[in-house]
Amino acid sequence: QVQLLESGGGLVQAGGSLRLSCAASGIIFSIPTMGWYRQAPGKQRELVAQITSGGITNYLDSVKGRFTISRDNAKNTVYLQMNSLKPEDTAVYYCNALNAYGNGRYPWGQGTQVTVSS
Image (cartoon, rainbow, N blue to C red):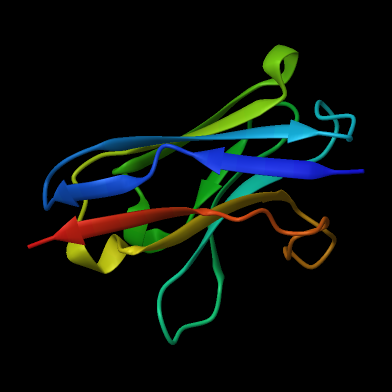
């Protein structure tokens, strides 16, 4: 059974930083492309950053230069370092492996809330 456990969210002022972690179990973690998604109130979930098994990354335009995704296959964990946070980054953040359409492949975890105050 696949489980995804996100942590590291919180309340931060604009310009601040947070580091999110996602521990995965029940999958061969080293194989799939992993991603961080977010969902703000009243909006659809969107893919923020992704990283392939080989470490190739891609980012949503609005977070380029501010967010960094990384992974530790030995620990089955993917990270999201978020710097220069803005109020519009406020959302619940989730991790998942990507399916062929860029959507989450496995059941979603509970996510971690990130709130950025102005």
